[in-house]
Amino acid sequence: MEKKGYLLLADGQLYEGVLRGADKASSGEAVFLTSVVGYMDTLTDPAYAGQIVVQTFPQIGNYGVVPEADLAVKPSLNGYVCRELCDAPSNFRCQGTLEKYLADNGIPCLTDVDTRAITRRIREKGAMNAAILTEKPADVAAAAAELASLVIPAETETGVEDIIPAEKPGKYRVVLWDMGAKADTVTQLEKRGCAVTLAPAGTTADAIAALQPDGVVITNGAGSPEDDADVADEIAALLNNKHLPVMGIGLGHQLIAISQGAAIRKLSYGHRGGNQPIEDVKTGVCGITSQNHGYEVDKESLPENASLRYINRNDGSCEGIDYLDMPVFSVQFQPAMTGGIHNGAKIGTHTLFDRFIALMGGNKECR
Image: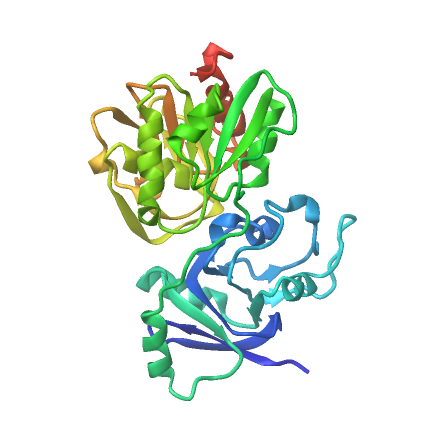
């Protein structure tokens, strides 16, 4: 028999649906995702830690659970909301239903709700605290008020805890400063001849310098960059070298900007999905990118040594920065999950990872 479940937003809006997955209540920041495919990427993306994700696409789970698509060992998000959860998936790689996967990983899922209405609410009111509940609150207003004041940590278990030496040899020694990286980042670097050492977020600049890397990649991760001021200080210390090639992705992009004196602001409802358009302001080339973030670097606050490189074509927000006095660049979007060829030039996997290799002495044409 179906069990009722509820989604309560901090503004007092309550939605009734069917509770599936883990039979428990959970709170998090409610955000919506516009991707049509790739729900396994979403569920295992470390950047969704602390969030309840609302899928705008109406039916989820059609191809079941496909471990090969995982971006991390286990999910980090706090809850999942979709219009319909498929009970009979069909795919040659399928290894079970999505409902069982969610239950096994302790993630409650609310289905049979109007996800369009929820998305419109978040767009109008902005991302806000929310809770998936197993019972209807006796006093909705009081429950919403309590939810609004709740501080929800964005903790992820996917980041490494100790420095892990490279598993594969390579021409370039690269340190991956792991804020909650997607697994494919290591794959892309290894494909380009990098021996990748993993370093946790709390690693000091001196410890990273002691590894004598040819370059450093500062990865994406969850939460507000303003909560990581100590990491930004260490990044500033590392960049004092002025000669070490560095690439920043997502949260790493924001932390590099903070380390150089730029300001961060929260977007109303963030950019989440595989269809975010960007433009390279240097070349005029456009691309479609995969993004998952709720904060942006305020482009009006960029220091003199920073040059805006990419913008979002929807709202004009900062999507990438080049640093003029050191071999450092960063992007807000996911370079390993970007498609599109325009005017013979690519924005995405090849250009950005190859550009990082170029900074370490590789193909100079990628600069």
